[in-house]
Image (cartoon, rainbow, N blue to C red; front, side, top):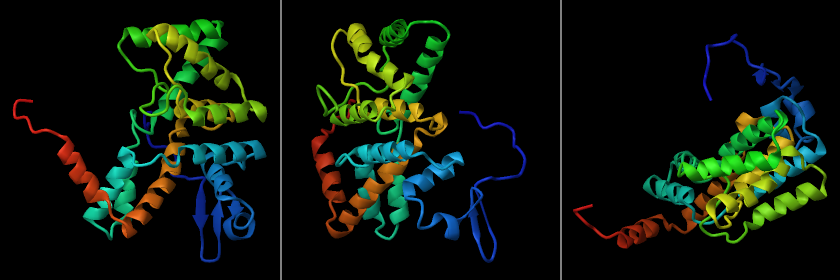
Length: 260
């Protein structure tokens, strides 16, 4: 993403005066509070439109699917930051979210770009099978990793992926991006010579794109979802601090070698 030249000095999201707050053209207190769920409100904030029922349902589903996954690196960073400054809850949350990157947690964004590229090539006349085979083969030849494939724990399948895709089929929201995602496992196995698990990031990206969620905001889903998970861990950390225990165990696990 590139930030271009400054545009007109305007914002369409929100304004306020002494008596009211307006969000996306709607009165916050009179029209939105008590009517929209937080998920619906989030969709409105990001897109400027209120979601349809299926968009709300699947956005909820995706947020739940990625909110929590145990003592992940982002959680460890957040817990240890809170232990370093117990008063700085906001800093601890920020420390965890800063770990949402191209290897951990943030790969749904890369999956979205991959699916958009594949979809454009299919729209231009190539077959879906040829496109996914080519993308997988080129990635493998370059020594790269295909976004959305592989997981250190979930093998041979990611149960979250199975559930998301099953519900997408059941509720009739599967479109071209979910269809392409489903074709990638065979292409990956052909290119790598073995099956690799399609993880939840690919399913999240495919469903969001088929629901017309803004592609540039796909990464917002793991960021928003994991914020909830981090807050749960930090609430627990306040009662039962384990950050320094993790730090000590990590240090014990690493051998000192001056020649490295």
